[in-house]
Image (tube, one colour):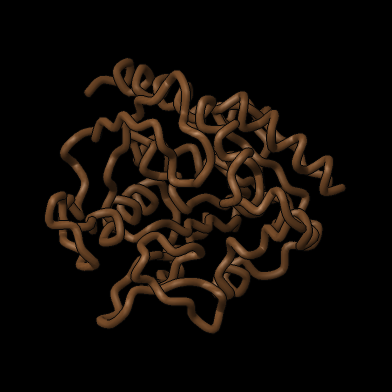
Length: 275
């Protein structure tokens, strides 16, 4: 697939996220109607891996509503959030203002981030939890990351494990509590086209641009892209917990997150890399 075709599909995704934004703002999923607690989206191991953030320049790529960006800023970072959806960036500005947190937001495609940010470099780049599946070219992404990081800077990727994305309930009419391996765990087969009026949150139906495209990326794809761009992998963690109950049979853990009943399987991974 050519770069022009990638750009076309990403414009479709951009329109879809513009359409999803009012749905997400109206939902209870992000807790915007309650006392805002953006740190609930972070596992304890993420803060351990990220380390001290006070007075560090931190960039959150594909930030959507900026909830995680707020948590980074509250930890003392000079935080910048970047997203390609104009509606998401406008919403993120409003959420940060109401929370009284100083965050800079920039609207740009990830692949244009270097230019959009005026060639600035950062101590930390943070991304994940449903971000990489919307990027068609990981090698190009990793090259952008290398240009965004200062020498010695840290990239932190926390993403849904490929195994999570491969699981699904039995199709109708045989639906039940069991999950099946229904989708590929490895990438490389091109984009998956989706067309849905329901997002992953509660709230009203998505109106207008309901189509989107996703690309499956294995963990090996991510690691090889980053090492190919000159980054050094320092740590890889796997976790069996998610910050919300994706399926009804998930059980609450002492951390407040959710896991599937036994057997334990990885649902999330965290990757630390250095420039």
